[in-house]
Length: 262
View (cartoon, rainbow, N blue to C red):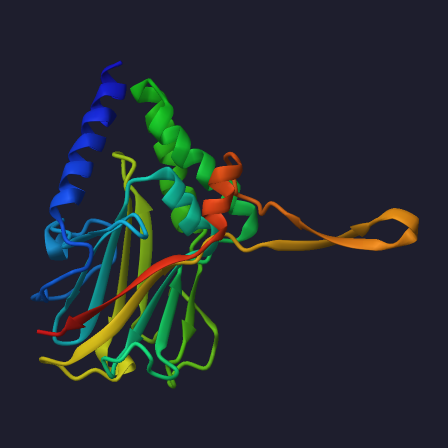
């Protein structure tokens, strides 16, 4: 009961905090010194700037002299499953116009199909286990399994990078990581070198889009009547939950905004 009440109070506090934040970030955030991707949000002191209801995420954009930094926090299990299913795509238009041709697009995390369902279940269990011992066991499995499933980053629209997917250990300066902490919050961090994006601070304005891609549909050809075949859509691996959950999981949600580098 104590654990259940703790998460109830946490949910109320997060809801109230979300109501007090704008739907998109209004100010630039400067970071002094180096940036690490470890899920700790030390660079912004856990000070998330906006809560977007369309995507159900808390987020902050920030920059220093060399890098653009994106931090995202997720507290909802359905949103977590959606991210597990198709990743987050971050689009950057360095012209400041969202209609710019061939913008930079980074997609992460790219989770392999076999890992999606187990990771989704572990996150749900982290929320529902009633004893501290059981929760710690689930957290241990999730804290190892989730980062291990994040091996590649999707890249599009950066002329210096020809590959559509690069390793998380790449030499291009793109760094990304998503972790789940003991409070059942998913913390996502992304670092992008300004030079790869064609950005020259200060005071340059970008248009950006954050999209939760959703579960990909699986089309499968199966035998039908009279020797004919039919194409059906299978529920993707990892789409746990009821029909309403699945419908929400399969559709992308996103928003556009602007950010001016300090």
